[in-house]
Structures are given as structure tokens and as C-alpha cells.
Length: 398
Image (cartoon, rainbow, N blue to C red; front, side, top):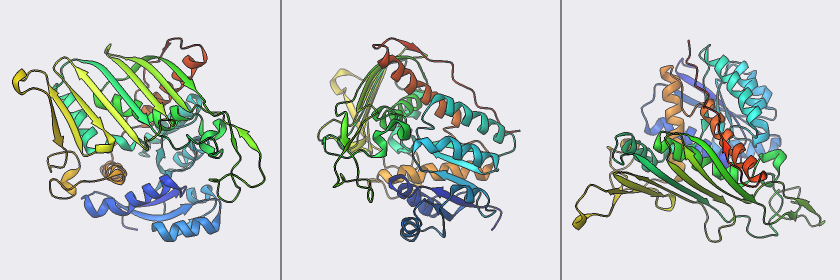
């Protein structure tokens, strides 16, 4: 392969595998990048299903053991889209093998695993091997624009952040006991699966990190039908149930390092809400608001404007001056969910091609994991306040 072509080996082919595949296929066609990705191999345990995914999603070859990807000289990047209980083992081994790593969020199921992953990433970074955790919502142009406006001081001193991530896909008690509802596979429920996104997105926007939290969690449906062995999505005909061992919903308050207050809600029991992300940031000079169901819009309030014409201004985030959008369509032509992954891959390939460390780093992934653990610990202790450790600083490559 050409020196600037990086072979990719991806582990997992379901929802996230499909989203990542779309991004690997399209990034180089829309963005001028210093490195090119080659979709070299996809990995899954079921050969027939993996071969079908490879044909559908555009991968050149198939492996059924992720370790085989690490032994291939035509693969330079490992993309981990498998359940959380596999992240640490695969990422640590891949970094030790000299492969760059993109790992889906949350970084791991536990803080201890995340710490091991950070140690492996820091050691690998000394040899020019790089890593990134996949918080794709950072790459939504309106969220990237929100970060820019805050960093420029448009909102003044940040005082209050509120965020929600609302879904309803398990509201039916007969929905089966899939892996996302099992702590040994997923680590946590709504807290880690979707709560992790709003923790990262809000910290990204305000350029600050949570210093302490107090939380509540609840599991509303504690037993669910066992899934059919063939699909994992519908209840089995033989009957039987299993225990749900993760949270269905999580609520928590927090205080940022600056002293700003935060309130967060993550639930899979918000009837009628399919993938509703809402973030509002209030500052001394103004506010901004984002709703993912209108993902091409950002609402900005300028508190210094005259009252006669004051109020929130709707910004249609489709101009070429807006983050990422110069690569896409004429102003006013909207983009969608899948573009956030394309932007993620474009940024990763840019950093790898330029020899710079991508973000968010494994250190940032660890910090989010610490927040999740603190919320869970607080909830278990009757909402007792939990202080967070100082974030681990990234170590630059030699």
C-alpha cells in the first residue's frame, strides 16, 4: 500500500459497525485528507453473518478472531465497535501490536479498565501509535459551533449547563434481555450508553470538566424475556426471563471546575422520544440551546442586545464557514446523523496523516468513565455527593 494509505480492521458489524463503515467509505471522498483509509477487514464471530456484512458495507475481507487483525501487515488501524466488555482487551493488545486504535464510547465498562487503556495508550504514544475514543456528537457542526462561541466568550462566564438524552426503545416490558441490559456486557445502562454522550458533549462545549456529582438511577423493568438465540432481538419461544442488571434511567446534578452548575438526565423510558438530545448553556452574557431533533440548528441568545429586538436567534448551521460544512452541500442543504461519524473519521485520518494526537483521547475517555462511576456510586449511597479526581493529562508523543 502507498505510504499514506492506512488499512483498517473493524471489529463489530451491527449498528455502530454500519455507522463507522459509512464513515470510512465517505470521508476521503468529501474531505481533502493527508491519509487515505482502506477498508481492509471486518471481524465478527459468525462467519456467514460477517461475510454478509462485508459485502453490504464494503469491506475487502473477513476475520472471525480479532487477534488475526493484529497479525496482519496490511492493517494499521483497529476500529473497535464491539460491546464494552471487549474494549480493554482488544485496545491494549492492538496498541501493543503497533496499531492505531479508534474505540467506541464509553471507553470501557469500569474505571480500572479505562486506566489500563490509558496506560497502554500513553506507552504506545511514545512510539507514534495513536488512539481516540469515539464521541461522535462532538462532530455535529452545531455542537462544534457552540464550543467555538463559548471559547470566544460570547456567553461570558458559564453559570449553568443542562442536558438530556431521551429514548424509549425498551419501554415495552416484553422487549428482550439484549446485551445492553446486562451489566457484565454493557457496564451500565442509560447512564453509560447515552449519558456518556451528554457528559462529553457538555464538557466539550464549555471547555470545562465536572468536579463532583450527585445522582439517582432506577431500573423500572427488572425482569425481561430471554432473547431468541438466532436474533437476539425478539423473545424466545421457549419462555423464561432474566434479570436486568443495568439502570433504565439516570439523573444527576454536578458542579464544573469553574463552579458552574450542571443537570443531566439520561433515560430509555421517555415515551415518544427516539433519540432526543437537548443541551442548554447559560452564561453571564447569553445562552445557547441545541436540540438534536433539529441538528442543523443552534439557538443563541445575546444578553447584551437591546430588549426590543432581544430573544433567541436561530442559526441554520449549514454555511461553509461553519465547522466541517465546507466539504458538503450548498448553504441550506441539511446533513444528518451519519455525518458526525464521517467528521470523526476525517479528523482521525487528518491527525494520523499529520502525526498529531487525535481527540478525544483515551485520557478524556477515562475522565468520562470516572464521571459515570461517580454517578453510580452516588446513587448507590443515597445520592451522596461524589468528588471527582483531577483529570489525567495526555502525554505527548516523543
